[in-house]
Image (cartoon, rainbow, N blue to C red; front, side, top):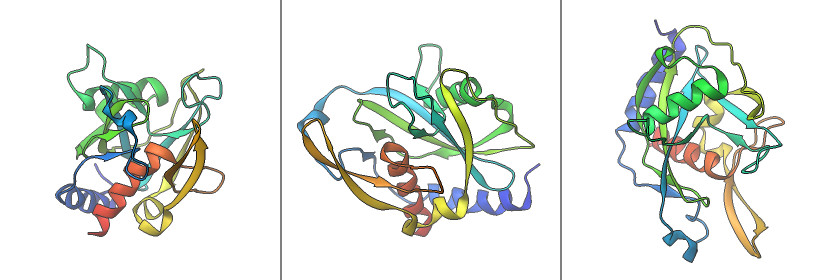
Length: 198
């Protein structure tokens, strides 16, 4: 059964999913010829708990790709996955110990193209009942939660720049306390905030 905050949140998210929107990209603010590469499908889970908070992870600092970055649970679509939603649920179970049976899937946002050449599909869902995260050793350093009010407010996001591979790259950020939410995660959450505000 959904809590009162989740019931209201469900209505807002379902309405946001009905707002027309195209795909997003890490290249939205910085066009690049690298954007012509072939994409690999992936799925990430944007799941909100009983209090209406979004569950995010801090990737392990020892990882080869994106060490220490803030991310939605998820990963590439494996041959055993039926689609990006299945991949997102499988990865969420592996990374944070979330039982797929606890998740009510509301829908998906348009795919987001990453600089690492993934077509990343954000899957929106609600977590039913209590959930105590179990971070995957060696993959996830920390699991934390961000209030819906921060995620949904377009004013939480700003554009910053840094030098990357010899060129300046612009990207979205949405800092929250000690957590620096940026890159693809901030971009897809920014797209969600825009649809929520529409």
